[in-house]
Each structure stands twice: as C-alpha cells, then as structure tokens.
Image (spheres, helix red, strand yellow):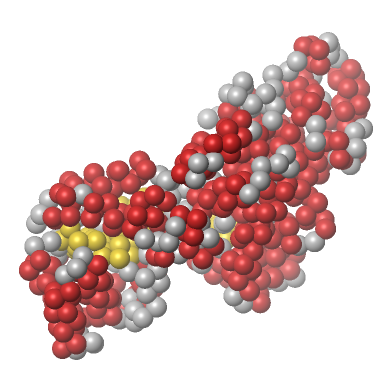
Length: 523
C-alpha cells in the first residue's frame, strides 16, 4: 500500500490497514510525545511495577495511530526490543465478555507478534496451549500468558485501543484486572479512549488514580501546517508548500474550523493538493465532502431522541444548558439531562464552562462535526456559518506575519482612529461602517481593519452599549459575530461571557476583546 492509498478514507480511519513502513512515514504529528513515551519505556526497570497509562482524545486526535507507532518504535529500538514485546489488538475488542476473554486476546496478540517476526513454531505452540485452556478460566489464561512471556525473556506492553469498551464490559471484574496489573511487573497497559473513564476518576472505583494520563488535544496552527508541509514534501509538492506558508490567513481559517484535529489536517492536505485557489469556502466544502460518509453514519446510528437533541445543540452552535435544550425541545430538564449524559459518555457532547454565574453548558465535542451539521441543517444555518468563514478569512488576513499571533488584528491606523475625539464623532464613524452590505463585510480585510481600529475608542469613550445597539440595528451582526461577542463582553466587563459563544467565534472574539480592553483578557 502506497502513502497515497493510506490517505484514502478507509485507511485514514483505520491505521491497522497501514504497513509498518507507512506508519513510520505517516506518523508526522506529535513526535515529541512519541519520544517521551519511548524515553519512559527505557526507564522501566525489570522487576519493578511499570507505570500504566491512559491516552485520552476525541476521534481523529491520533490515538490509534500513536498506539501503532509505539509498537513499531519499540521494535525498532534494539534495547527496548530486547526487553519488551508490544501487543497490538483490534481497534474494538467486541469479543470480550469476561476477564478470560481479555487474557485470551492477549495470547492471540502474542501469537500474532511471533508470526509477524517469522517465529511460527512458537506461535503454533501458543495456539496449541490456548486450545487446551478452559475458556472460562481467566486465571489459567493469565498464568499461561505470564509463563510464555517469562520463557521468551520479555515483558509485555498491552496497547489497547478503546479501553473504555473493555472496562465497561469487565465492571464486575475490574478489581481483579487491577490486581493483576499491579502484581505482575511483566505487564504494562497503555490504553486509549475517546472519553474520560469514570473508573479512573471516581473515588472508590478500581482504577481511581491508577493511570498516568496523556491527553491529546488539537494541534497548534504551526503543528497543523507542519503536517501539511511534511506530507507535501514527501510527495514533491513544492508549489503547495510555498502556498501554505504564504497564505497565513487561509491556513488559520482551516485550523480554526477543524480544531487542529490531526486526521482532518491530513484531509486538508488532500483537499489542497487537488487545487489551491483563492476560495477558502471551496476548501471547506471539499473537506466536508470527505467526512460526510463517516459523520452521516455516526448520526444515523444514534437513537431518535439523541438525534433530536443533537440537532438542536448543533444548529444553535453556541453552548447550551440542559434547561435551554429542554425548553427548545419541549422536554423536561431530567429528560434532556439523561440524553446529555448518554451523549457525553459516548464522547459526542462535552461539558464546558458557561459565562459567569451560570451552570455548566454543553456543546458538540468534535467541532468539525458541528460544522458539518450546520452545512446540512438548512439555509439559515449554512448562511451563518459561511459568513463566519468569510469573516475569519478577512480577519486572519490582516497584516499576517507582522502582528504577533496572540493579537493578529491590525494596530489602529492614525488616519482612521486618531482624529476621533468625542463619542458623537465615533458613533458617526461607526454608523458609516455599519451601513455596509452583508456581502461587503466578509470579503474586505480593509473594512474589518477600520472596525477593529474603532473599537478601543468605543471602550475609552464609554459608548460600547451604543455601538452594540448600532450593530444590532444595522442587521450586519451575523456577518460580524466575533465583533459582537467581544462587544458584549466589553460592555459587561466580563471576558468569561465569551464562553457562551462557539469556540470558532470565541477565538477571534478573544483577540478583538484584547485590543478593546486588554485588562479583561488575562493569559
């Protein structure tokens, strides 16, 4: 399989389809994390209890790829390969119904390892032993695994994807699993999950405070660009590399909308490699086409009530409380809360901090899933999204590479703002700017530069409420969503109110607020 094949949709969502060479080549994200894992493995001394670990991250954050890359890295390192055997499992172990099933899967994975290394006689011996085992005897399967590992003179790294599935099915045996992992230094468990494990943070549960946790968050803008550049370099696409490095605004829009998801970064490369025109909206639509089969299947698999709730949450876009969702759906709060709990457990929604003095709110966990749904939810939702895309491209194109990333918007220009001395003068300029048509707003960096230049004066002259009223009255608030969010926070003197808007709006709104009222934005 070539790298081009690995980039196809089926392989992209299933790293198990890649060859070892492709995994080495394809793993271009998080090299520092990989190196840290390997260094930690090297520090594990024989006979001492190893540090078991849990990798957390939303779908597409690279958990499965990292597990496969760890297995290959151990094999590639002479010192580690002499001490450890990495055991790789199917992404979902649906056949696990008991602890015996889990240990039998470990024996099967050990046989696979030996076969892949040309040691078929030892593999056959393991298969023969497994045939003689009582498949309900978990202790017998465990002791067989340990005895074979001792005979091989190696310790075992259990690289278990979707470990939440395993632990959910072994709830009545979770203490027995913990005791085995604590008692036998030959076993080190590295699990991955798309959701936090209740058993790992609930005091009194078997795995409370048991794992060292590594959380995979979205890549930074620079890391995402590095992935795309590395892939382009491997394909000899030098022209694409130049365009990616030059069009800072465009890349920042794509990073904001995808949330730095590594899988989506690879899809972005695929989209850009087909043609790099000037329309970031076309990039977005092509990217959405790529993810539609997976996202549609995910939504179709949900029960009807979950679909109804997720529809309301995704179309609203901004975080919502259980009460808001219940009111929108005509449900009781308990009914909405029950559905939210199920969706949160499945990693589909997540709790987030709301504005000051409010209870926790909820939003769609994978942000690009929300973007995808907005594009399919009807004319109004699509229009709102596309106006934000236009705003982001114009805003992120303001003096790229000159102003620090934390405050990307342009400094106020003397010709635009220095002459303003009174509140009435400022409001006159604001009315002139807000008289623009919707279509002009999204496409004009110069227009946004003028607006951004006026906003600090609005705070200084204490007319923020009047500016906000003019924005709402003008009808262009939808095209200036981040500006409006920043104004609301500035008027209230409370930056936490930005928590009430979608992350895609919050990022530029926070930067704009930092220009308007730096004292409100800390860190």
